[in-house]
Image (cartoon, rainbow, N blue to C red; front, top):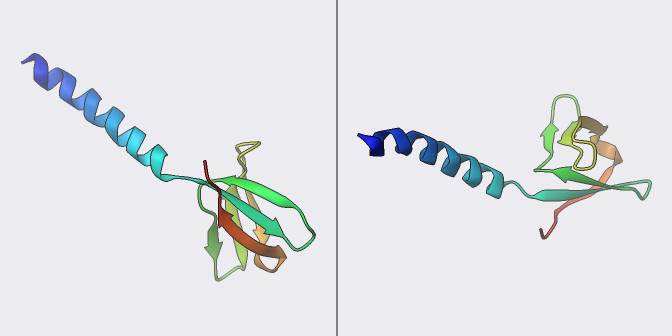
Length: 77
């Protein structure tokens, strides 16, 4: 019976580690020369032309116009 009580927390912790291990930081380079480090992959909204991302420094979700983005590259963590 003890095994059942330990299985749920173990599975939840494993899933959390798996999810957090899959997200990697990205470097978004802007046309004006700035580099923004994001937590995870930025999402591009084709309808609005905005790129949404979580700023790795502040933890806040921010947006930038797609035509202000020069490149987006995955960083080696």
